[in-house]
Amino acid sequence: MLDNFRIFVYSSDKTVNLKSPVESLFHASLMNSPFVTRDPDGADLFFVPLDSDLSTRSTSHVVRDLRTELPYWNRTLGADHFYISCSGIGYESDRNLVELKKNSVQISCFPAPEDKFIPHKDITLPPFITYGLVEPQAPVNNSAKYLGFAKHGALKIPEMVVELIKDPDFLIEQEPSNRVTYEERFRSSKFCLFDYEGDVSGIGEAMRVGCVPVVITVRPIQDLPLIDVLQWQEMAVFLGRDKGGVKELKRVLGSVSEDRYEKMRGSGISVGRHFMWNDPPQLMDSFHMVMYQLWLRRHTIRYARRDWV
Image (tube, rainbow, N blue to C red):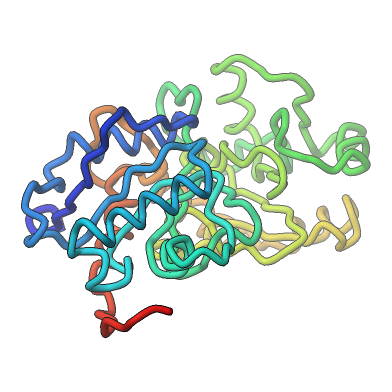
């Protein structure tokens, strides 16, 4: 991949405006990477720069211009193209948007907006860590003081939060802490709780220090970061929101054997480096893992050209 994968970036008349830090970092890393080529005929994929706040009409015009002015879109109806959009592209009747939505690879932020993500085609970026851990070292075995920990903003279930605060087996952070305290709380807990509808940005951090993530959700999750390459069931516990509250949560966590727990913990630690964003990028970090997922999608179906009504 490092030697052969090439991406052609369509030129833009202005600087691309991306709102989230992780979008901006991925875009900057891509533009400064050796993957970018000036030879479109030798490219495996094509990158379409889109502003974060670009209207659907303007997005349609971008695709229309690619179709009419250059030959590359029409060869696959956009199937060898990709773009970044945290908000996602919805289902529209416009021909240009239909092709972009159905064929091109959308790179979204995690979690992706519901109904704006197509599994097995689209990709989510690993969450951006506002501040990293000092030394990503896992705690020694049996050093966990708490069964579970949830950081500020990670749970969006008020009744569960109230119950967990009263339970001595859990540590619930009600206000954001500083970096050192935050790190120590991750290290002192066996499991780290995340609500899929809340703040999930700490999942990668949790795994890096040996805190097994517990993801609470009301629907199947198909947009997990690096889902093409990671066996999430071997690293995390998934629990339905309506499955009995705290009582069921404690039952599920208590049913995890020590052997299974250590395997999950070890798996999380071993893949922790894949959830680190570096500037400049380093091998096997978040940027390169996203690029690897794009590389897996480089063999596209060449649709036959057809007339449109």
